[in-house]
Length: 360
Image 1: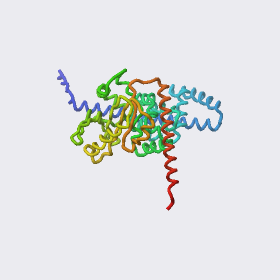
Image 2: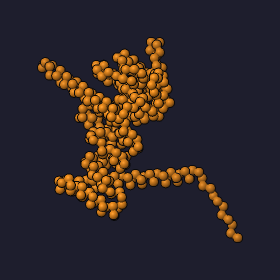
Image 3: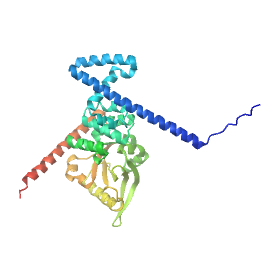
Image 4: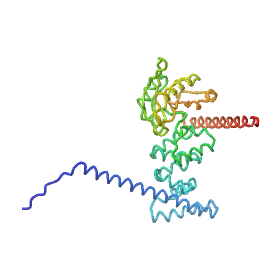
């Protein structure tokens, strides 16, 4: 009789290592397939566009898409439906530069691009594409950012178009993230579950209870450091409501929570916090701290006259209950329009002052 072979149990580390190899290879193969398909779709869209432009007739474009789709679906399946071909055409239209697509496709899937390409404004599309690349959003996260009007809520949207373009180009070329790409107004804190009347402490407690969600709303790169951070100046004690650090900006962030409207006195309080942090907490390789006053409301002229950004301070409203999307959209578009007009007025005033200076 043959002796039975004894079963040998593999070492746990061997199983772990082989599993890791398999998973890593699967992930790299999936990424390679996604990259290949994304570029294929862009090239198909460009080629169809060239054909349509050659004829310069809209009805010809519809006919060629329908005919091409029928032929391709017979040979290659449903992925080449007329609807998908129109996605590809749109893709090639709004991302006309192959070099930019080549940079983005390493992090963005075809599903990401389909969410982005139908944004109306070119700056919006570039903002979402570059932020998605930098922060590695999932498709679901990207969809949520778009639905919550992230672009319209970021400080960058308040600037003139040429300055927005400059910051997005810097992000694309050097991965240079600026505060205006990170900070928002308003912040949507509906996940805190606060209704009707509540105290400042209730707001702070709710933020810490939902800290993960709050960090997502703050943006990528933030980490929590302290609550009610005690600082001492001339034997007087002061307390910073919330203290964070952003590794991408390389800055401390002090947050002051206010239940009511922003008041001029809030600036002095935050300036004290920032000067103390700069003197006692800031590390050698860090940039100066930034302050964020989160308040229930603010008056535009008050904020403008105080020139808060010169002191490294930002003021933003928060919403614990979301208004209807249309109301939020109108509010944000009005804020953007007002901010851009104010920027243009400051620029004209500066130019006028320069012209008034006597020649020497």
